[in-house]
Length: 423
Ligand code: HEC
Image (tube, rainbow, N blue to C red; front, side, top):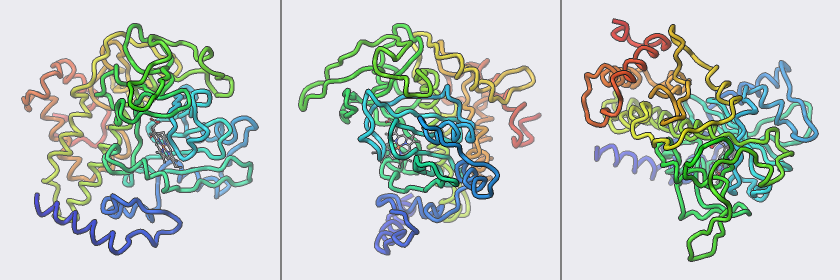
């Protein structure tokens, strides 16, 4: 272990002395994590995410983006990337390179599916995108909101300042935060959760976010504006409880949707951290294979992935939640379903987010394209937990019924399972 750490330190030192990546075309490198990014040639590798593929189709003349007078390229881009309008989330904390455009009156709208995220702010000069490449992790792009014949996405590594940090597990990734946030969008960085995942207690979530739907008596930080006075505790200006309609809080008419759906937000919070864990595992597996020719040193990250994949320690939902039906229906329709009609995308929203405790990101390209050795190892561990062969106390919360259901769904729907799963 000491040797690995030593090698990592040496590699980082050598790379930074040599000014690694300073010669990269048009991109600033990230100062802290060169070693990780060098592993995948992050800066120079051709990305194969959905935005890169869309760019190719635009260049070949196979498609183009229409420019709408109100929203610019947004509606056309969402259509091309298959991101539903119902996934719209509104966040008013000042994050992004276009922070000056964001406030509680002009929140940033996010749209997403499990391959890409698009961020739009009314009147801002650029659209911002994050697309997941199965090897590189998050690739960040901007698109100028000007009407041209062939719109161009620009890979923008300035974004890595926030999208590669300890909060994203030191790999390029998506993130969700929750802090006390003022009407102006200023954030009190000492006040909340810097990484929000499905494990974060609901009472600590949604600071800086608008949240619509019905969530009963649930305690949370959504739709709150805090008064931030240096040295004193933030004072909250708005009541908690459910908010069905944002019209009372700001002018929503400029946005494609009047909502910021609570169910979509719960999905985002699960998904971003799961993706980062999978990308982290991918980076570590590649490093280990290159260094040692095998992946036996990865117990720590593999078990973290496994536990999160199976929703161990998911924060309980204390009061039933109802989002808008449009998003939940769209999400559930993505499937796949097993022969009995069951899917890992089915919601529960009574006590937990999903009905079956295994992440649908097991079908993602990032998972599918993990190095073979590590994927086989994960499948072996998953099999041991689901069949009860693994009796460690941390897996006790999984009931026999839940384990059986997940086992059956996976056996039916996952194509590349080793033969012993079918016996
Ligand atoms: C100052 C830090 C910061 C910078 C710089 C930044 N982002 Fe982000 N970004 C965030 C945070 C934090 C979130 C999560 C939303 C929140 O909690 O405010 C986010 C969210 C996003 C999302 C939604 C997916 C997700 O991660 O939740 C996209 C898309 C995005 N950013 C794109 C970009 C692009 C493109 C750039 C560069 C042009 C960029 N960001 C620069 C902090 C930043």
